[in-house]
Image 1 (cartoon, one colour):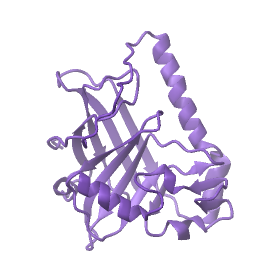
Image 2 (spheres, rainbow, N blue to C red):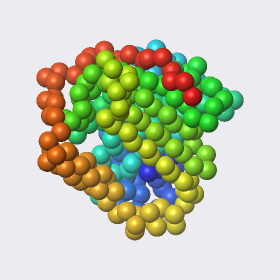
Image 3 (tube, rainbow, N blue to C red):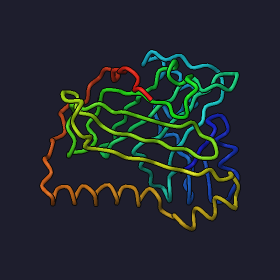
Image 4 (cartoon, helix red, strand yellow):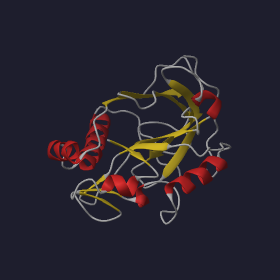
Length: 238
């Protein structure tokens, strides 16, 4: 995955002849892969989406953790935006979740939780979009994310909305170590993972096939995704 400064994406994509902005290449950052109108600056789109969820963004740096497009193909199950204020303090976090049907939902962490001086920022939100046919809509997401430093950990589980004592039916952890944004580092990654997003989507369908084969209950896709923004729930105790 890459960590990009939303105000310096064009500059960062020029670091290698194999990376581009909004143009076909081995690895591309394409504005169409993220929320809002791709003709508008990403910071502006984030500000609009934040306001729709009752969050006011300051003018500090914003860093996006995501996958690029590889040879024109992209799928990001989840991307994280880390929004800072002018003093360098984490101001808000956004989890941008996508499904294989081309839909997206934003799950914003309230600023008062982002500003806590804890190793991991934790928050909970009601599920607002059908993602997996093996998971019902009656669940809440629980996020735990450390701000980007020399490493980064993102943990996500689901809890049954009607039985919070139930064992989570989904538990995923992403652990990353930071590498420099240089042509050499990017080239090494491209050689090791030349089609990373193809691997992601193939892995999703392979796991779905295994679950189906095991007889895990199937949940049909709702006819219509909810129009209202997802409801933020109380923060999770550290």
